[in-house]
Image (cartoon, rainbow, N blue to C red; front, side, top):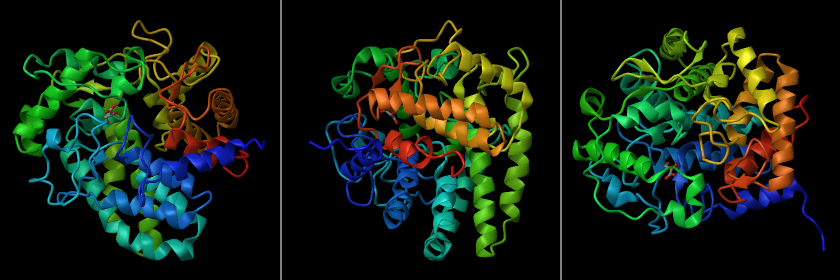
Length: 421
Ligand code: DGY
């Protein structure tokens, strides 16, 4: 019997989760195309099948709304294994696109990974990038227009952050009346252990926020003015700032006018300052409905370097996280009263976020910190497979072992010799 190498296993996962032009995050739990999962998939495919990598991004943009938004889920084909599906979101009449989708977006890492695809073979990628460039500009412009009013980028649903049940949302979610959501059947808890997922109350709130937006025809202004949830988010702000820098670079390669993107970069460099919470000395989420910071140090704050902001004030926090967990970086400060090493975004280590943090640290010249993160991720995957996330204390894998984005991160960053990364 031959044993497949981890890279061969990772390739097999990407191929196995390929549904023909797009990749599902994993079989069962997530049966559709998710936005940032797909961007990671492209990053991984680029290591062994560049045309397929470009196709992943093209398929993602096939769901772009007329207003520029690229949704967080594209429902290419019906699957009863997931809730809430397309009929619950009810976006078909307002998206201006025949592809059914959710009504919110997700962290915009796609431009950054598209740049990685482009740099692998500029001659091959030029035509593809020409076709995608204006679509990226429309999407990033949508963020700046509809999520950027505070200077930082906000989320109008916890799912938009990608960090569904992070402690960042606790106070804002506590203010949401979810008494009218009625009965529904969750599907996630039939795939994985409920102890590792968001709670029932979390789900009620997710639905209440969704129903408000749907019942208001997904009208962005109405959602901002009267919606139930509006929180400025370090993940969105840092990933968009980085994505704008990469989009600008790509625009320059194509000879495009990038002055509008330049303006966005300047605005976000200023906007991130509004996320600095003096009380905890860290970038933090801020509830725009109450003006209050969440008060948590999360792994999202370590994306400052990824965004091109070398903020030395963040280094002691990073050192603290690296010392606190044998498998770092935990998604929430291990000293936080909300920390739970098993529950999704309230403590577990996510290889994908670690990859983004690691890329940023490398770019900023923090080689030894990046190496610690890379070797922790490698050890977790070697011991526990391509899980969705891992316990930072004992490395236990969770969520299932064939996750597209963990496999992609392995191929494109974790397994790389730092000199080539
Ligand atoms: C879910 O359903 O768990 C997703 O994270 C929403 O995007």
